[in-house]
Image (tube, rainbow, N blue to C red; front, side, top):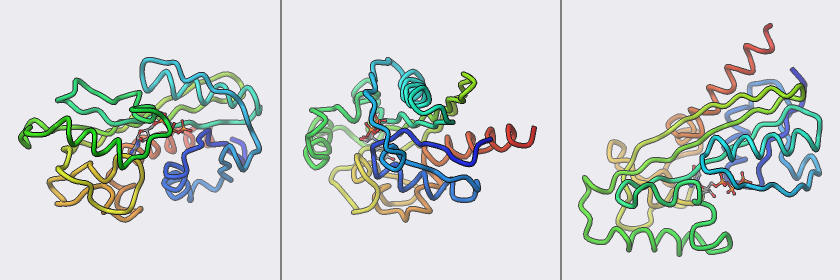
Length: 200
Ligand code: ITT
């Protein structure tokens, strides 16, 4: 394996979590910005898997190095899985999460706890310079809260409530969120895959 991996994301919240999870891999992790890569990524897949692979492949082809990418989102059962793969684009890419989160709370107005079930999904894709592709998926189950809680995390974290912990994912430390989260699970599975490849 190379001594450098590019992580194809422009999302700084993701990048903070990713850097911590991959810290012990012994490989330098570069963001798109660190690597100075500016490419147009056509995120037009219908699934998290398709979009993660599109991101990883596009950047691998531009850089020639091993590239990882993350496609993730929030699925709310009462809303038939919305916002799903459109999580970043929900109500518009530039709309603040204060507004997106309040809108989702409003759409669930009057809906009882047992029907507020939701999950975060994360798919990590690896695109190797020889053309091989690997993916790994992770999820975390929760319910949509009644108000925003907490200042940590990013995106929809303030409304993603974990009943068994009595807090939102925005109220967890970075370490605890990584231990429990969709991204932590998917990325640890991918890390094992990369370590196996390295051992071969
Ligand atoms: P990149 O494509 O550059 O990685 P992005 O933010 O556009 O960044 P996605 O298309 O994968 O990434 O959208 C994921 C969205 O899902 C993200 O912007 C958040 O709104 C939401 N999301 C994913 N993981 C989350 C998490 O751990 N906590 C809160 N919201 C999350």
